[in-house]
Image (cartoon, rainbow, N blue to C red; front, side, top):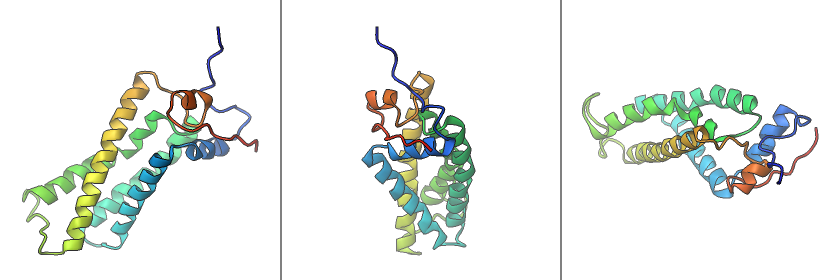
Length: 168
């Protein structure tokens, strides 16, 4: 019988180094998606002080301490890391109401500012996709997929590339 593949980084690797290696091991399409999603939210700073942009920036910044703690505690990225986007759920509800109803005042109209409305739709739909992917990841974590991305177990499962590990 074979020994199980390591699902966490070696304890001799520092927490920061383990987190960095885990980040580096993400599949290219996931890394690209995350950078694009961040860029979409960064545009919100341009549209301040509009209400939808304020809430986009607030929900975006609310993720920072959550992701920092989760990655450090897990010593890398796991499927449970999907919980970091919980602050986006109320923002999605708010933005959906602003885009598709008049419940919170007149909905944002195309005639008001076309580029702004397009940005809001990009934020809404990309965040909705992200949260849906996060739900799937969290369910898979509870179903037993608890490896840290970048470890041999994660690579064997096809969840990430195998991270080159450097001792620090």
